[in-house]
Every structure is written in C-alpha cells, then in structure tokens.
Image (cartoon, rainbow over all chains, first blue to last red; front, side, top):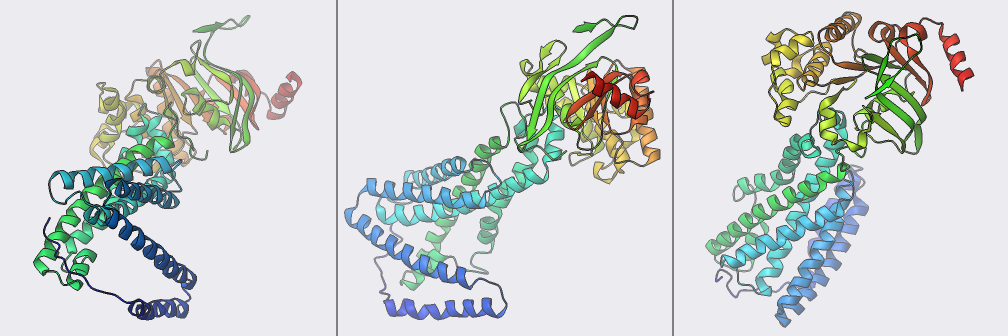
Length: 262
Length: 245
C-alpha cells in the first residue's frame, strides 16, 4: 500500500475548542424547538472527547509498539463493546449479545483477513487499526439495525408466523420473509450512501486525506477500497446476526417463545 | 388409538386426551389441571373469552407445551411425535386470517411444498367452499370471510387427519358465518377428517359437533355428547359439573 503519503497536519487544542461553537448551534436549535436533546448533546460531546482522546493515546502506543498482538487485542475489545452497544438497539431479540458478538467478530476477521490476503493493505497497525475500527463500527450499526427490525417484525407478525408453524413450517421457514426485510434494513443505509458518494457527500476518509494534503486521486482510491470493504463487512454482519439470532425466538420444537396473545 | 366403551351408547374412539394439564403464561395460570378427552369425529371446546380454550387447542399440535401433565394423541404423548409431522397431520386454522403475501394459489401451495407433497389447489378451494377461480387472486384483496376459507383450504392441502379450528367464524358476519359452517358440515360429510372447533357460541357448538368440552377459567366444567350436554339449560349443566367436582 503506497497510497498514503507521509503527510500530516497538526491540530491544536484551541482549534478543537473553537469547533465547539458548532455544538452550541446544535444545543440552541434543540432548546429553541424543545427537542430535549441538550443533555444528550452534552453527553455526546464529553464522551467523544474522552473516548477519542483515550483511543488516540492507545493507537499511538500500538503504533509505537508495532505489535500484531496488541492490534488483535484492540480489535477484540472493539468487537465486545460493539456487541454490548448494539444489544441496546436489539432489545426485541432474546439473548442478542452472542449473535451480535459472533457476527461482528466474523465480519471483522473475514474482511480484514481478505484485504490483507489480497495485498490491499499491509498487515501493520497503521492500516489494521483504523480500517478495523471502521469495519467494526459499520458492522455494529448494520447488525443492530437488522436485529432491531427483526425483533419488531417477529413481534408484529407473530400471528402470521404461528399460522405457518401450525402448517408444519420450521422456525427458519416461518421467518424467511422477515429475514429478507431485516437484511435489507441493515444494509440499505450504506448501500444508499455508497450510491451517492461523491455527489451528495464526501466520505470521512477522503476528507481526512484531503485535509492532510494527500493527492486527491489517491484519496479517492483509498476511499473506494474502504467503501467496498465496508459493503462486504456490513452484509456479513447483518446476515450472520440475523441467522444466529432468529433461532432465539423459538424453542427446539419450533414453537414461538412469545406466542401471540389469544 | 384408545377406545372408550360407553354402556348402552355407541363406541367412542378417543383421539386426544389431556391428563392433568396445567399451562401458564406470563406468570398467570391459563389452564389448571385439565382432564379432558376429544373423540374421533367433530368436537367443540366451548367457553367464554379468556377461558383458555384457544390455548388448549394450541397444545394439541404442539404450538405450545404444558408446564405439567401431558397431551396424548392416538395413545402417544404429543412430545413423542416430530412436531412438524404432527402439525401436518393435526393442522390448526387460527382465529384470524394470517395469509402469506401472494395469490390464493401461493397460500394453498405453501404447506404441501414445504412437506414435498403433491396437492390439488382447485380441489382444496372447492372443499373450503371457494370457487376454484379464486386461485389466481391476490389473497390480500379478499374479504375476511374469503380469507378465512383460504386459511381452511391451505390446511386441507396437507390432507390432515384432524383440523383444529379456533373460533372459525368469530370475525365474520352472519352470512359468511353460515357459509363457513356449511363448508365445515360438507367437509365432515365428504371426508374422514376429525374436527375440533373452539367456540364461545353454544348454538354453533350444537350445530357443528357431536362432543363438547366446556371450559371456564382454565378448568373443564363439563364434557360429553353435545346432544345431551347442550340440550340442558346452561345453569343446570354448570350445576352438574360443580356437583361432579
């Protein structure tokens, strides 16, 4: 990988603090329209400051150590936190943590393994950490959205599901139409943003590289690679989360654990 | 198959037996130590709303399992059967239509395709009291009464031995109700299928069944031949049941 030139920019604390003016705009908008988001905005700002600063130091340490094991440990921690976070959005799915953990782990290892195997990125911390973070973050969102939709659909359509079970359908067969919709929900955001990229918005990586002084063509090429990697990761995560989680709605005798109200 | 000899009466072949069945849902007891039998032929499970009769029906083809006690079908605990095979033999038609997206044919074909069986959609529609010309119509655009008969047709496509019908006419107006009841009577006349009908309507139980299990607040309060049990005034029947307990 030679796309990344050794270019860098220096950002001061004062410049970060100045950007808080835009956060004030968001808080004023929320207050003016009684959206009730001021507290959440405040928490988001503080959390992003602490979390990103901390991860900045962790990444610096990992880059300095240049240890593959440290990279793996960091990615494993991201996968576990991702599964915990996604579980909050998939409350309608019984025992959703393990399907989410499995789906994020497989999505991350499969896509990172593939890009390294294809020679797209070198297996070094400089590439694996940022790309891994993007892959896990997008996979988490896709899996959470897919399971959230699956949980809602199973609840809303429990009568239809039980009616098909009553005809001798397996639990997998009974939820097949719902699986399609949930998979679509999990993937559609990234698919749509990929369609409009470059027209309506500039993706973050490309913007970051341009700001850092990279050649625009190189920035575009790297962004394209990341978008394609993310598409693969998102589809693996959503599909695997759904496949693993759908069993949790049923007993081994193909009965709904929460049947419809009589 | 268990045969029960009734002195001075016809021989009753027992299809289902519920032995001390208790079932709870969300911490609330829905069925409490239920003992009942349902013979071959046409039976009704009769009771008011919330009495547990729909739950009882769901136990018969293992859409749910009791907390304690056992449900016996043709002499064997239903838990000894493969649940999918049992449901193809003992098919349940729910209270409200719940069709899959697609045409009437898609719906009738659904279960036999899963089971890898052949079927004749037109015959099933005819048995369910629908014109075979309905086959290509969009199921979602039918009236509730027509959808309920498509539900019946798709259950019949499996050629079941027993049909479990949960309040089959509760969502219908009187004309549609009469049509569905007529369909069920013709079905009995033309096939060897046993029917178990859940209903809150005493007159419907009398019209459709030979045997009745009366249930109230999760307990069986009376059971016997429909002609005898439903001929009595309600108060008398309940008093008899209370005396028996």
